[in-house]
Length: 91
Image (cartoon, rainbow, N blue to C red; front, side, top):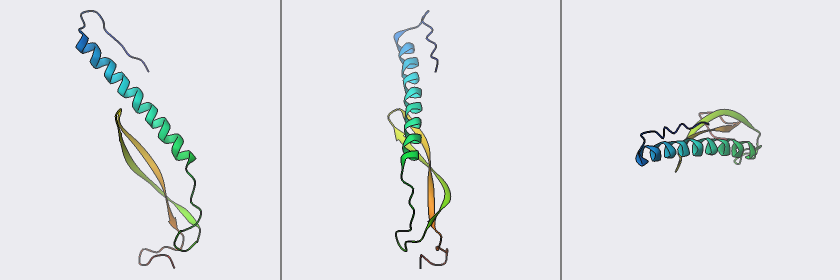
């Protein structure tokens, strides 16, 4: 990451804005890295809590995490029971 501070003819307010924006970008990048590592470390559920049958991957869902550094998007993996049918729940 690179930050350009134009110190010639700059006032404290404009320098403060540049520094604050850079800190927010760094914070968002750190949160994105942390969220990615946490998702990899999450245990993968193997069995349905209702019937005990094997679960299968069912895509991902986007979630928005609001932090002091700004918003970070994470994409959580979803699972479903192999026995599930839309018209009924697990057997």
